[in-house]
Length: 292
Ligand SMILES: [Zn+2]
Image (cartoon, rainbow, N blue to C red; front, top):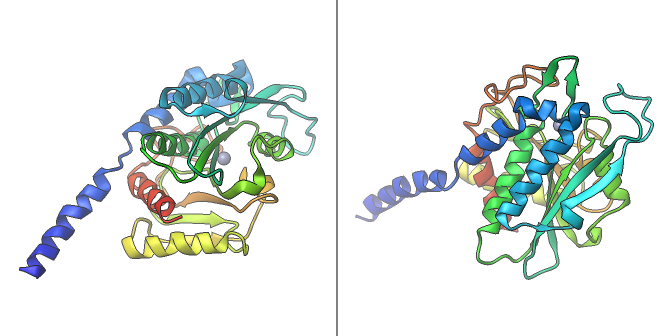
């Protein structure tokens, strides 16, 4: 009887745990952010600003509070000669910044860049994997956290512009932070979140400030098998966690393996973006948050 109850319990709990999270909201956000009316979320036709306004409206609709006036932290592109001129010097863009207060002023920060490469002539770079998917995941987390009755930590959600041109938005935030960086317990950057058949990779996983968190993530995953594996890399200036990792424990999570449509190519479309693993990945992150 005990054995039967255990088995029954197992079968009852497993689907429930997975049903608690689905990919419907993420799919909608990825489809919206990759629409031709977003022009690849770059400089052409101010696609980046159209996307920023979309993200801001999502935050507003969830009741996420603005971290600065109208959620926007403006910045200007510098003269960048070392990279392809995706964006003109002096072009104004913005980071979209919100928060959900908790009982503690200790903060968990989520970040994702919402902008992408824009257009080359008439060709749109849709950027579903890079990084409509990470933007969708962070918005989805904001949506779930805003629905909780009780929160210990204060949650901060930063959506950066200027990533593709050299981490310009997140670099600006690191210089002009809107939160007390010494109150940040952990920063999680999500960039490239379609697919993931081979698991997840964590960048800046081996630092003494971040390793205990990655160990915890790994332990939860080992117990419950959400991702095929969790890989670890040293820190690298390959996404928006990089400049912020000087001031707080910061990790960058991306998926390993497909399916996704392409990388920095017009084939990186919504239809190419597989979200089969997404519910398990979000459940992993939520389980991890509960254990912090
Ligand atoms: Zn990216």
